[in-house]
Length: 375
Image (cartoon, rainbow, N blue to C red; front, side, top):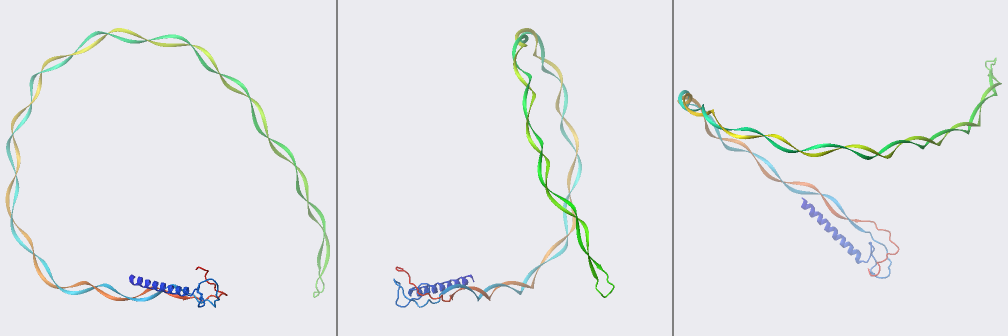
């Protein structure tokens, strides 16, 4: 299927290329540009020639169309058939048989035996041993002794002596001064003024069908009228300022002084002394003594041992034996096989085709100029 589509696409592409080459040769052979056909007898050269009009232009585009294609496919179809086959059937057969077996029984017996045993025996033997005997004697020895000696030495030392001195320092503090400030403010006051108003009072009529009469009366009253004016007001404002103050403080300081001291110095002097020191030495002396020595001697003794012996015995018993009988039978079985079957399928396949498209002619210019010289 893929090869068929590729072949059709290649054929359509060749047709488009052939049509395009033919159209280009047709237009180029007449000497026109952009689809303009010049008059017969005029070739490319210097000069100009009048042209009546330009013809329609033809272009090509690829269009996808759908075609029905018949192809053959292969399918695997199961096929079931009844087949005569031979089967081997094995049937178990049970029989009872008399058998005889030989076995061994354990029998315990007491056996008298003799063995050699080694026993420990103590014997008196004369043995030699060595003993270290201490001997002490006085020996004169010389040794060194450190003897301390004291003497007074005058030494000079530098010491720091504290003293108090006065020092003047400055401190900066912030002080707030109260300064009067005059400001203009808007003050609103109210005054009571007389006001005359006209009030219409209705007068009843004696005739119920006649309209009512009204009488205008002036009424005098009072009204609070606001007055706004600018007043100069003096207020107090705090203004901060920096003040520098001098004060005296006591400062503890140190000065160095040279002072003399009498110091007791201890010195060690090495002296040689002699003394008598007892020195103990040891000498090795050989001596003999009687000692009990343990020796191992062999002794023969009798003992009894229980021995397990195996005695053969015979017994009879019945055993159920299973044998198998083989029979061949012919039966009918369904056997399924698979076969390959071909069938035709109609499919709709997209095909790309090169189609010519004719566009409307453009309005003809006054003069269709030929290409420049040397084209």
